[in-house]
Length: 87
Image (cartoon, rainbow, N blue to C red):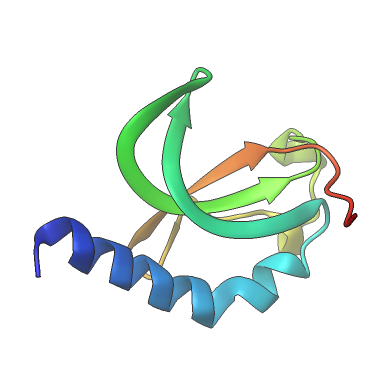
């Protein structure tokens, strides 16, 4: 198994362990695995992606709704996705 596969498996384990808790936070509409976005450009860094309806300044969030930048050693990227509506 190569390093990238091991990294993805580690992220999958963290996602499974923390997904319900993350989805319970205000504004969170999804949790997945994907590439970090920096200034609207995709990087090659695979991370745990937390999708929010709208990004909100940290100061306006309740402490329990703040999404950490890292969970169990796995980097987290918060990405604005808009509202997700099932069809």
